[in-house]
Length: 352
Ligand code: NAD
Image (cartoon, rainbow, N blue to C red; front, side, top):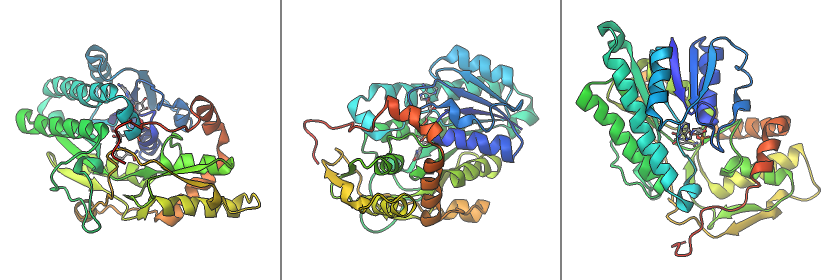
């Protein structure tokens, strides 16, 4: 099995590549531009393998993407490259429009040209997996969850750009017959997570005794998915999912942000006590503009059709994650030097 993974130097992409190379024994080509979020050290466990290779390419560069795909001759393309941080999209949406919409279009078109030239049996085996987010569905009230048929209603420039790319991906099946599948997942956490997102930022700030910023009143709810559970789900969807379908991926682990932060404090107080409870470091800060109140994924389709189950509960996954950060300063210390975790994405007219 030969798989192109775009965005393979990112948080989820690198987990997917480690899974495909180390556990499945697949040949993988990682295509990544290495933006601030791309970290090749996340691939240290596979970098010496002959079955793994890397090309530094911008997904908007059609000539380079075409040449990479036609030379590597994949059975699958798993498209994860994206600008992924909501706060950065509020600060400047252009890069999100370029990478997430035009870049996805470029990867789809280059894959289509390659797919159309394949022999019929290879054409029918080929799969294109477009990896997206539950944020395309907008925000939930206190009840209910997102299913695959929930109407799209994105709130941020990030989620709007992902929604656009999901529509393109679906259209490439309906119009051209290309075998595309879309997955929409909830918030991921786990090892190798760039320290700008809530969980790794909280772990590192708490470790260093720095303030722990919590947006608004901390009651926003996210449905947490351990990244390695997600990587397994993506491979399963690419392997056995039905063409033209969407699969939601979620860990059934809803938590309020404030409770996530408190849990991390408690684990660190246990493992690395500092003489006072770290909860004292929590600071409520101005809310994110357009902050969605609640996300929750109904993953019944993935569970019943493909037999997937999340292996980690939030409690086991968060403990593993905190321990991983304690043991892997070599990975995060250089990133922390480049970005100290300061606040991004506030606008003067924010609605709070
Ligand atoms: P990430 O920001 O950690 O990694 C993105 C990767 O894409 C980086 O390695 C970056 O260098 C690369 N990239 C960005 N622009 C590129 C370009 N123009 N050309 C080539 N490479 C480029 O993101 P992630 O958290 O690993 O997310 C991966 C995918 O999963 C994204 O499509 C994201 O929308 C989706 N997703 C993420 C989450 C989450 O919780 N992290 C949740 C739902 C969906």
